[in-house]
Length: 476
Image 1 (tube, rainbow, N blue to C red):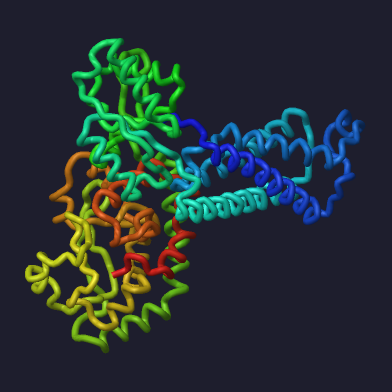
Image 2: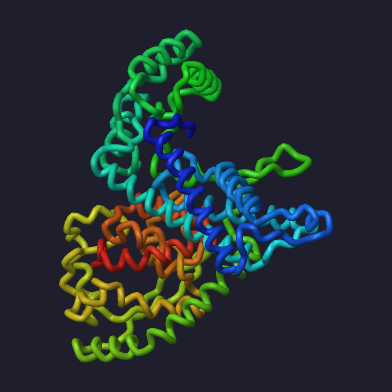
């Protein structure tokens, strides 16, 4: 999707550049102090460098400029990622890492010998300060959007029923940060020649005068040839252009392709992690889960006793779930329901309490939940035994929600890609509403995670899980 920068986005981008510069400068000067250096201290290295007596003040100035430019080139200030998912944080982290790899390479090539403590502390503090700046900025955008400000305005074009679908999606908030300001309706029969396309584009230009983006609601209206000319004419107007993907097509829209060398074959890239990434993820899972089990063992004992004293039955609940590559395993939880909960399920399947999920069964006021169970679910304590599943390699700390086999039986199309990753103790679904999410929203978040995994993503999700649990939204 190609977008024009709205007025607010241009101002916000300039503010981000300034904020990034201040954060980087603060980190580097603080690093100088912690390293016992002064801005007048000379840089060490080979004779030519030493003779030049290059002070750290010049080094810091060049590093600020280089770091800010690297963040620009890494796409960390693109309008479409503002307050959207975790891509902004990922790009800030990756851009910072690339910059310091470049610093290391230059130091090696030119035999420069800067203080390693200064470089290491500067990198760590800089990343922390930059992420803090972005977090403050995102919170500001979210508050402004609650006041109907800092939005990307959209003109929706396409056939009648598809325009209605996209407009309803925008009004429901499925596309966060966008607001519909116009509609242009036409059918496939209206765009069969260059003259037809020119007329439609002319009408769009008139109707979309106040829009930042023209959104095609129904790409099937046009053949590839007509679409090419349609986009070219919009570029010439100029108008920014995007295509709406239906929820069922979200995974297809995110597919990545690679060229098979020596042939005309395009291969769909595997979403699986490389061997190094798998090892890193597994190592972080084992360390974090092991530490968690040791730290929380007194809570495990206390909760187990409370569950046994509250109602008849075991302290733990085991249930078969479907894991990575459709391999079944038994998930562990503290028991929160009466022991005959499964027998009562058939009587309750017609009750939904307004929870809009066609695949997952959830009741906000489920009579099968015990008194202690309500408290455990309220604070997500019932999920803690899954740390043992993580240690056994059946789950990961972060990943898609582990489904029941009955849920997998209802999967269709790209939804199966959720099973390409290990299920997680937490995930994007956990920090985005949990049981309050409908099925399509859950799928979209899980596929987003599968397609965009990184250690930084996992760290950010884990960090956001604690406040999400404390808010208790969707916990029932």
